[in-house]
Image (cartoon, rainbow, N blue to C red; front, side):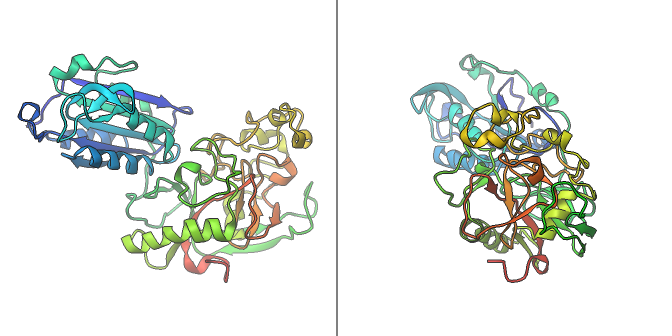
Length: 431
């Protein structure tokens, strides 16, 4: 029998406007308390799970955990929330006022705890804010009626109507624990670490720039390229909140959604970040045989950036609209008066004087954000592609490229990951 809880509370923090996005929920059920006076009937969680799934949430359910186990589940869940998505921790059990980390808060009573002790809601929200990729974080507590006097918390909601305000969710082609190939551009998949990937179908395109293109460089000779196999490309630049490896302590990413920077190609990215991802994928069976995580080849990168277009930028020939799509060296940076900002644009502004949270500006038609700005991106043959927050519009063109040393670290250079068949990378460059 479904137990009807009379009180549900929601604490939420929003970053960015609501739009179609991916969602993940951790449902924690505690009913078999060791203390007889705390025991609750076992709830039927299936209706709840169905409601959450109807709102687009991928659900993970854990029951009757002690405090350390709940803490580990929250920390792990927070570290893999979908980038620019919604994260929900839904607790079904008892909550009581208390202190956690020297702050007065509501405490989630674990299977062994007494009132006044347990994991604080403040800790749960802090974890969701600091880790993973979520831009919208939500905690809902379903508690018995006798606990309602304890729930005097600001910004609370008394039912699940808050879920109705989230808007339309995005849909993934398969669950996070099993990657399959996409079928068309627009298909998306969310990996187990929270990155959203966009499908780039096989096709042909002209790589490089025509000799008449304004601002071109000599190393942009045009050639016809065939992408024989479709591949997944990260929808966003890799954010700080998902990065597990090392990075130089001079990195300027401060927010969890800032793109990681000051990372080398060979050591920091391929050896310390992507290699462990492939090892874990092989062990878990996440990827089909013959597939791998990697850095894009130059042709893969430009093919995805152009998204079927042939113009200087994927949005057109002139750069007058660039501030809608790229975080570049703009008026916002120039107005800071920084020494190196003198070359920045005097009138066009994207609104960010430095790094922008990934996905802040409009995507190309294949759903890929920040391809021409924010941070430039490593490819698997040590060429830097795409513009950055310090780049002029000329260096944000689709064809622009710059050779780098594989140990170089720059505060305008980051990472975008692909999932592809191993035969489609640049030969001899995978590590």
